[in-house]
Every structure is written in structure tokens, then in C-alpha cells.
Amino acid sequence: MVLDTGLEKSAMSESHFEKPESLIKHLKESREVSRSLRAATKVTELARNEATRKSMIKAGAIPALIKLLRSPSRDLRITSSHALCNIAISKSAHQEILRNGGIPLLIQSMLTGQPDEVSAGGFALANLARVSQLASSILDDAGGVGILTGLLKAWDHSHAREACGDLLLKLSLNSGIEDKIASNGGVEALAKLLSDEDVRLGSKEKALGALYNVCSTNREFCSRAADAGAIPAVVYILRKGSANGKFSGLLMTKTFTVNEFEQEVYQAGGVEAVAKLLDADLSSLQHAEPVNFRQEVAKTLYELSVGREDIKERITEAGVVPTLVALLDSGGNHLRSAALKVLYGLAVNNKAKSAIVQAGAAPRLVALLRKNGRDSEFAATAIRNLVFDNDRTAAMLVKDGAVGALLVVVQRSSSLDARKQALAAMVNLSNEPGSKGPETICKTSAVEVFAQEVMRFSSSRKEDEFQWAAWCAVVLHNLMEYDECLPWVYQALCNRVSLSPMKNKLKDMDKTAFKQWMAELAAESDLDYL
Image (cartoon, rainbow, N blue to C red; front, side, top):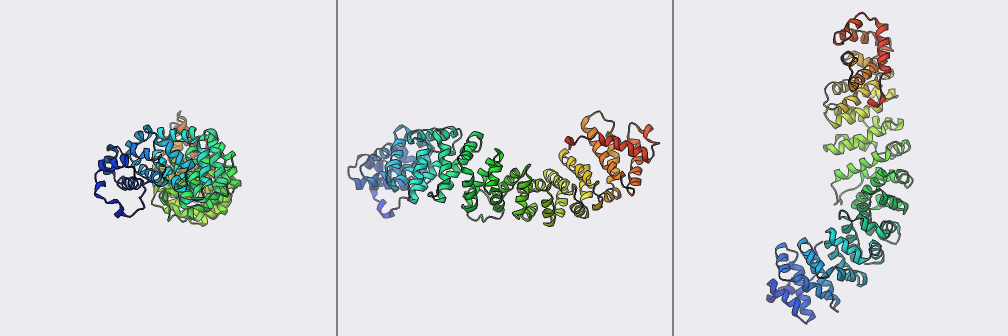
């Protein structure tokens, strides 16, 4: 935070204030309040510049300004606080401010002063609070977070509120200070402030930022915040806050969710509130890039929906599936991956399956299969879930070329996880006759590929290789249940017998024997493998 003087430039251009040494001398020796006030004002102005700031620190500005914090003149105390605020931008000044007793005096101005004095002291302390040691001293001398939250609530003056909120936020940014902030009811004080109807929204957003910083890596503190009633208040900020406030609320909601408070978020209406953030106006967002904001929305939706059919339906009912599908066209890899995860999580729900394919996901997912890496894995997972026990969605994906694209992943992907998900999708498609999945697998080279994999690895003593063969056998066994597919599978197996260590035993097998063998291999498949 850099403060301006608020005075006309002409009042600060007296020649005897040009040199730092002369300026500091007036601060130290002048007995005239007006002269000291002009000198302190000039220091405030010059301290905005890094080079002159260093010169004034070297000339002894810090002890002189701290001495003026004890002045009977309110204007002089405020201006000296402003000057110290700008000087405190340089971390090299922090220890000297601490040694000269500046922190207790600035805190006193916050606790006992008028709004302008509270503001000046608060902003100066906020700049000092960027260093863990000083942040700890500020909390000790102030009497804990509860005192600061009380000030934030008490002041009906915007500058005073902003200073208190800024200080809370800066204090919470220090690594390792969470315990000190949380002590003496600090978490509960912040949560209570969020729920207080008399506190303005902007102040709540600062308090929410502080609460998130304290709770983000500590399950106990997160639990205390939830128990203190913070979740409904956070959901309110998700709905009504500024873009920056919504972002803090989003991060806090994800923290609650990963710490297993998704039910409380659900009951407070948080699922819909988070979902609607995908279409939020982010023109005033400062704390993150819009693409990162939407990425966090997608991540939070995914965390909320894991293992919760009711939440999956709530997300679908919120009408955001088309937006998620549109994000598959995003140029940002991380945002696209986050959207894919939400979609493959939703795709196990029948209501969501329909919404996803109706939003045009099928051709996009097929296109993403052709990309190597995480995109193809997540797209294959989405297709696996979409086609399971649903002829309609399976038919749309088959029509858009899913079988050929999945086969490319099975054969060529450098990611074993992607290959497994693609194989699982083929297993599901081979079991959906109404989708033309079995017929399409047979009429492409896919059936030959699965026959080849069975012959190569069905005798392997390596569990991973054997399980791969067993799941390929599941596909072939499913296909052999259909009269029209049986000849294709039989011919493919016969064509690949020479690849098997058991070729002498297999070469004389008929259709019935091959079908029995595929059934036996399929029975050895372990669902945990996929």
C-alpha cells in the first residue's frame, strides 16, 4: 500500500526541504507543529520513490517519525503514520521500525484513534505485516485477531474499514503464522464477522481472504470455521460478492469440500452458487486471471460431485453443462483438463449423460482422443462413463467416430492410464448392441487388435500384461455373444494364433472352443486394473 499526501504540491517545494538530511533535521528539531507537519508530508511524498526512500532511511527518518507518533497533534500523528507506511514498503526498514517501538504506537493509533488515524496506522501495519516476525509482533501487541475483527465491524468509516481489512489479509499471508492467528478464537472471530449482517460486504471479503489463508492447509481450522457457521456466509459471498470476493469464496468452498464438508455446502446452496460462477462477470477481477478463476470453478465442481449423485444432478440442473462442454474448445490446457474432469465425473449420472451429449460433447471428446497425454485420458474416461448402460449416448459417440479414435489411444498412446480408459470404453461399447458399437468394432481393425493383444499377453506371468489381455478378452467375449459378430472374432483369433506361446494348442480350436477360452480369460479380469 502506497499513500499519497493529499496536499497540493506547491506546499511541499520549499528549498530547505530538498535534501534528505535537512528534511529529517526539521522532523527531529522543529518545535513548530506546522513546520514538522510540512516536513512529514514531504517525507510521505518522497518515500513513494525507492531511491529517495533509501536516502531518508539512511538519514534517520524512522526514529524521527516514530517520535512524532507521540505528538499531541492528531494531524502530525496521522501524517507521520502515512510517511511510515510508505517507508515500510522497503523491507530493509522493518527491523528499524520494530527496534524503535513503532509497532505498539501504530497499533495504539488503530485502537484509540479517529477513523483517519485508524486508517493511517492500519495501512502502515499492513506493509509491516508482510514479514512473519513483524506479523507475529503485531498480533501480540494488538491482542489477537478478535480485536482486529472487532475494529472492522465497529468502524462505519470506509478508510478505517479498509485499513483493518487490509491488515487482517496481510497478516494471514505469512507462512507459519496460522496457529497464532487461530489462537484465542481467531478462526471463530473471522467466521462470526462473515455472518454479521451489520458488516459491509467489502469488509467481509477481506475477512474471508484471511480465513482462507488460515484454513487452506489445516483441517482443524477448517472444521472450526465450519462449526462457527462460516459456510452459509461464504455461499452468500459467492452469490453477491465482487469478482475478487467470489474468487476468495470459491477457494474457501473448495477447502471446505476437500475437508469433507460437501454436505454442508450442498445444504447451503453452494453447489448452484459455484456452478453459476462459470458465467460470472469477471471484468473487475484482480486476484486471478479469468481463465484461472474458471479453472478453480471446474475443480471445485469436480470435488463437490465425487461420489454424490445428488450433487451431480444439482450441477446438471443448474444448466452449466453447455458451458463446461464449450470449455473443451479452450486453448488453455489446464482449463480444458479441469472441464473434462467435471464432465467425466458427471457422466456416470443418467440425467447428466443426456445433457452432455445434447450440448455437443461427442465430436469434441472424439477429437480430444487424438491428442496425446492428459486430454486423451480424460476424454476416454468421459466416453467410458457416457456409453455405459446407455444405448443413446453410445450411439451418438459411435456415429461421431469414437471407436476408431479409441483404438488409436489403445494402440499408440504413451500414457498407460489413457490406454486403460480407452480399453474400458471399448468394453462398454462392445456391450451396447443398440449403439452399433459391437458391429463397428468388428468392421474396423479393432477386433484384430484385441485378438492380437490376447494372443501376445494371455500367457504372460506379469500381472499387468495378463490383465491387459484379460480385458481385451472381455471385449471379444462380449462380441461373440452376437451372432453377426461371432465370425469376425473367430477369424481375427485364428489370424493371430501364431503370436501365442500356445499356438500348437490353439490352432485347431473351433468357434465354440474359442468362445469358451475368451469366457475363461474374461473371468480372470480384475476391475481394479481399469
